[in-house]
Amino acid sequence: MLLPRMWYLISIQWLFLLASSSIGLIQVRSQEGPLFASSRWIVDGEGRRVKLACVNWPSHLQPVLAEGLNMQPVDNIMKLVNDMGFNCVRFTWPLELATKETLASTTVKQMFTWLGLNQSLANITTHNPWVVDLTIADAFETMLERFQQNKLMVVLDNHITVPGWCCGLNDGNGFFGDRFFDPSVWMKGLNKMALLATKFPNVIGMSLRNELRGPKSDVDLWYMYVRQGAETVHAANPNVLVILSGLDYDKDLSFIHKRPVNVSFTGKVVFEHHWYSFSHSGAWKGNLNDACGWISASIMDKAGFIADEDRAPMFESEFGINAQKGDVNDDRYINCFMAMAADQDWDFAVWALQGSYYFREGVVGMDEWYGLLNYEWNDVRNPTWLKRLSSLQKPFRGPEMKQSPTNDGVLFHPQTGLCVLEGKDAGWSLSLGPCNDATGWTYTPQETFLLKGRNQFLQAAGAQKPVQLVKSEPLASRWNQTSNSKLHLSAKAADGIMVCLDVDGVNLVTNECKCLAVDSSCDPTSQWFKLVKSSHI
Image (cartoon, rainbow, N blue to C red; front, side, top):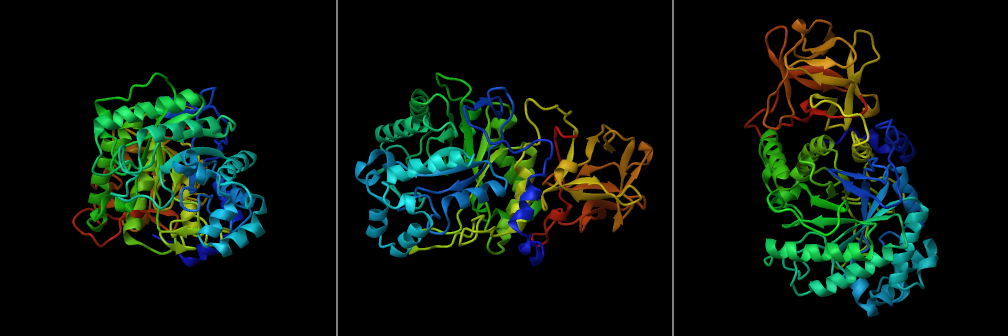
């Protein structure tokens, strides 16, 4: 749900200040490698968590040049990435960049001229003259240098074989043995790119292949070729994380439940997953509590279990929303996503950074409505979305941090990306605010919420009334998860009426529980809260 239009006037400088304080004690750490996989965490050499908060920046479409260089100087764009609170770029590349010499040796000027992108070339000459006479391969390598200079970590993602938009079910790029997907050529390309990455310690990971899919998909072949690809990358560059994608457009890793991936090395394997509103077509049209409940369970069963069971880190390497105009399915999906992403504390890469493309699917200068940046690449497209997303950029927890009991945490509000904190008004009021200021809670065996460090309990006073803090547990309300989303917190108020935790502006109140079942038209998300384990309380 979009907030009033006044939010769109917020400057990027204000948003940066907000993002930089959203978890307070733990900063978004920009890190040169090597990094390691330790249980469910990505960590540095001292075992401290490094949370990947990435943007996707494509370089896999024609003309095989990082998007946006026709709009702004590259260092200006990278500064925007930093200013928005991100520490990492998932940088995509087509396999032919590493395996087809006639492509790699073509200059940027020749490529844009051949495609008829004369205005884009003129604009690149204005904003980034350094790149015009470089070969496509040298331009890619120079981008890695610029990322390093701007202190951005990089995950190299082999997105497709033939440069172009991804991903069609039968486009010949989907699975091993497809027309454009020869496994032996693929491994040669991985080897070449892994060797290139040895020059750049900020290249901390390599994703073997994006969104495996199509009629040839086969689990046994997946294990065979993914192992070979992983071994190829590690042999060429043992420093990088090796990131493995699943089947069905990177939605399905369920086969890992009973059959782990066995490789010769340890401490380097990460799994990735993609989740959009269209990943579950039609599901968001029903009751939102029911939809979020079963979709969340499906996500955990097909992929989320890997991190939840401490098997390996989970990198949510693509997700996003139409940030240009309201979309009902996106609005519904993203509230559910935010709850799970905070609860699981996933590493992530949002789709996408780019505000526009040179050339996509036959269209010159196509707008990217999912882009964090506007069409001109000089400001944030949707500050409200960035503000919410900032709550996920810093870790809630990690292996080196203080570990809280299972029933301790902060109350996270997915609709806003804020957390519950003690209000500054008289009367012990509660409100929403940045998660670095969040109040810690214990959910007790008596089904009460105890304010950590204070002998005070959460009480529901009644419908349309502020929640209260009381000093006596017998006076406290008993709170339960009411809906199938497991995000409604309900209690019986003093007047005997069942109410749910809710917000009025930023203040916490209780209201009649809404949209619990059946009704598909109403929006329950103001009443959604998640107790998220946190090391900051």
